[in-house]
Amino acid sequence: MKPYIYLTRKLPEEAYQKLVGRFDVHMWEREDQAVPHDVLLSQAAKADALLTVVSDPVTQEVFEAGKRLKVVANMAVGYDNIHVDAATEKGVYVCNTPDVLTETTADLTFALLLAAARRVVEAAEFIKDGKWQSWSPFLLAGHDVHHKTIGIAGMGGIGEAVARRAKGFGMEILYHNRSRKPDAEEALGAQYCSFDELVERSDFLVAMTPLTPDTKHLFNADVFKKMKSSAIFINASRGAVADEAALAEALKNREIAGAGLDVFAEEPISADHPLLALENVTALPHIGSATMETRIKMIEICVDNIERVLTGQKPKTLVNT
Ligand code: DGY
Picture (cartoon, protein in one colour):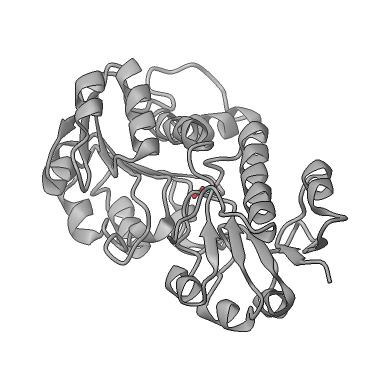
């Protein structure tokens, strides 16, 4: 019997062709809807390998159902959607897609920062809605980015890539991280500071930390109160690192000036969510790594990891050792 692979999203033909034939490959075909959890469970029960995406909850139940499961290849660098302890306990490899998306995600993070500061989305809608009647001095005036202070919470690869972009804009770069980054300090002039100092001094406070029990709601009502009232909060990591109810209050009460959000605690976020009703929120549908080039590389890594495990080798980008 050929090993059974279940893909929770439709793959491009080329990637699919790499697996089909040697393996028994099945996939969730609907592009407009995520795989329902009961389908994932019933597929996991038959599967040797799963290719999952960031919005698939790969719960303890999935690992209990997956009696033959050997590998879960998650198409993301983050893997907070996966119950890694349950996987480890069952001897299932969990893999992610690091590195290939670093620069792409940093590009989007910086684009979001610029868009939030300069009201780019609002301005683009304004002109298309036929609202432009005359040039006026403060029409759609935003805030400068250049020479302001950026505070990066979580100086991993993507945080550093954001810092490199900030350097090009002449920004003062502050960061907070579990460990200091002497190379980034030297090359970019980034200054390490405490989390409180980061929050208080930043004009742009950028959440780049992975979601863990320690970082859940790290950005809470207290943090938003300590931020400058002119500051903008940017989140391109995971929605749940911020307390969204507290964020919405802070934005509504103008305790902070704005937010640029690519991620949400629940995805897809519902269109009537209070955050989306605020005009000082620039929101994007979790597109940090969404370029053709990078998504293809991410898929290739997942396919390679699955192939390796199913042919008795160790996967390359393992998160549980
Ligand atoms: C990741 O890789 O973790 C991204 O958020 C997915 O686009």
